[in-house]
Length: 387
Image 1 (spheres, rainbow, N blue to C red):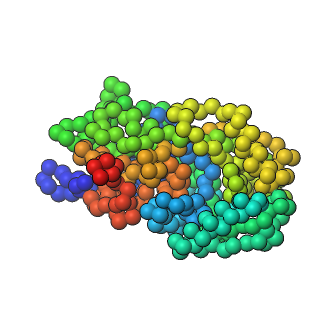
Image 2 (cartoon, rainbow, N blue to C red; image 1 turned 180 degrees about the vertical axis):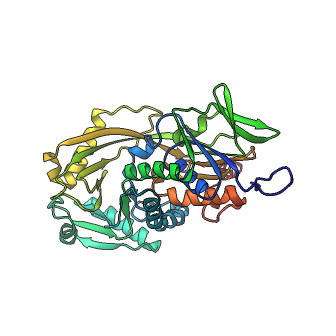
């Protein structure tokens, strides 16, 4: 990646950046770039923030979500989690809108003997990585959440794992884009890349071209499908079915994010209780299924029996952008100068928005690949194939 230069060889003060994709990643990058003085156009084929961003639960679970094999991703997740409070405060200051950040901590629970043993194994693994977690007896877990299943036998508490209301954050980002002068083009599909002499020079919008010095591909599960890429990123859709119930905001059944066997439960301040999520390799299928709803409700009921009395508020699906190793793809695209990748975040798109936005902005303005994202360049897949 080279710093953008004008014809006289000097660095441009106001680079033109086209961002493909108006999810939380594309909007966060656009906000940071516009705030730094870049000329920014974001092209979203539908409505901004209404795809995977809207479908998410907004968990900031760098700790309890870490699984064996994901150790390389942990530093990036922890760094972005640490940036979320400042990111949210800045977003709220710019727009006057809430970002919905909450920091009560996250609880993981288990009831049966097998569940407790698995929880203990995960706890030992995560503690071995230096994560701040505490083991709870069943009684201690129920002190934090009295309406948990009486049979809850053990729990793990992670004080640094919280949540953000992703829908509120997306609405605030839309307002922040307008406040900083970025242009959001909704209902505008990018049909290709405009390329000259091995460098991207803009995006194709049907029968016209929008010129750009740099193009950022942040199209989520659709990133691989953009025509004109020499090496399309290995991103695929991973379907998730979710639903929400309506609690009494004055007397909620739950106040912490709770991970239970086969589901997670995320309470919002307005009384919404989100239940998620299935993980399905179904391509771009977005249908709710009876089996998916049954699995979610059964798992939620086993952890929090009172859910059976709650009204159903909403049911939806989302398509996570999964990469070959389920880690994001960040940095210069191979084979085409001026194309930058910010995709493949899988289940961590909300969590990784701050660090992705900061690092991609720095890359575009200075040409420097931040140390936090260096392990996640697209070249790792070519290296793996050659090994």
